[in-house]
Image 1 (spheres, rainbow, N blue to C red):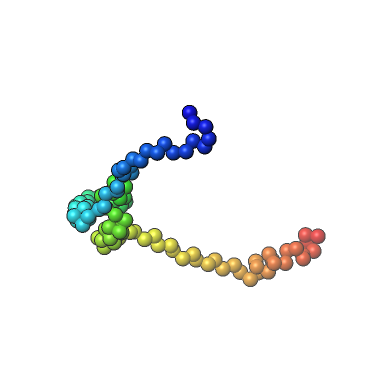
Image 2 (image 1 turned 120 degrees about the vertical axis):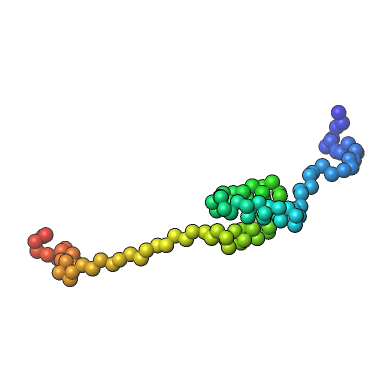
Length: 110
């Protein structure tokens, strides 16, 4: 044991301690694209998106390649759009509107 602040031991280690992430290539993009195209006939859009997200997590494809594949997927299996039907306005007769507007001023309720 040394007294004081306990400075460095003076040893220097060479070499990288961290891992270097894998860089996806064009061949990876082509291979995943072919797999995606094979899935189009039998799988739903959600399943194909999940497949592509799994490929990103495993670093098989990059985020840019993922976005390109989703654009291709949009051409073959577009996302279903929900159509909101417009609400129909209900008209109320003038007599009923007059009664509701003036019910506080009515002598019947006092």
